[in-house]
Length: 404
Image (tube, rainbow, N blue to C red; front, side, top):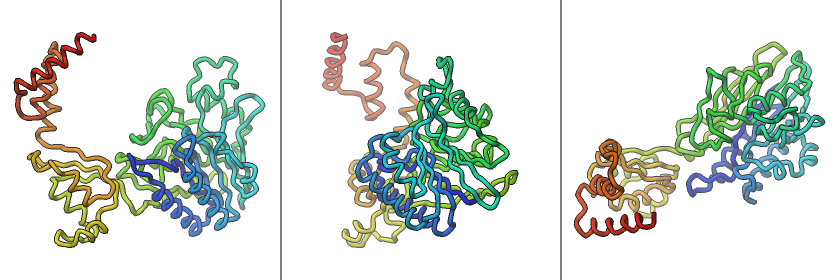
């Protein structure tokens, strides 16, 4: 049986002030093309379908189109979806009974009391049954009804309690979808700053990956970098598109899993799904960074301004300027915006800015706010405050002292 594993679509996400809907449509289209090329039996979406609990109408439309395309092009494929911490249970499960008639199964909440259990979908192939357990995002408070004493439940205990209640037959092949932060004492997964985890990534919200060791495959969501956790078959697929500069070196992909007979290791491959428009850092002096804006298209300085505008770089870029002469950077943003369509930020990293960090250690303990500000002013402007500036600042700080 062939499985596809994706997660953390975050449809409707913004990168700084830029909507990523067009990029998301592109990568979802590539996923559909990979489906028609490799013919999976099951598509697993491991949570965070939407970026917000109340998605925009456009975000709904994008996901609806994706599901319709999957159903049209892969009518025999089963799609399994769980809710992540960004998803609204009520909104994600809307029309779930209708979707099940099209082989699309959604689970949005963990069992809250003794009468409830995980949704389990059983499919068959030449080797027999495969049981898919759908475990949506859990906080300990969600499952307190499963404990005699619900005080002090850890995240790992919450997941463990949910799993131990299930009649899992480990003589059969079993797959689980889960959206949590998994690791072990020795193995902690890599994280990035685009993740908005529940408590603290690497902190009290970590769930033991050992709980998933007995499954043939664990399709994880929550972390944005593709990686295995402690076991080769316990994996995060990562996001299909980078959602911060910290993801610029990720190789975005979906996970393809081929399950054989019970006892055989699953065959796992990563299929690239990177979009054309990159998220990247451009670093150098202003002149070189300006040239980089045309480099990929071969547009030269002497060409017309209309052609320049048409051919300027469309990537999402974080720009780091290294010129030591700050005077060269006075109109830098205006000039850079002529070359780069989507500037996320512009930072300066030169002798002056590096000295700020070094010289922070020179600030003396016991300095007044006024003295500390004068030191900061001197470092930023490479000169001392004049008498008029100092008088204005003394007046401001004295007013602050009077207000307490």
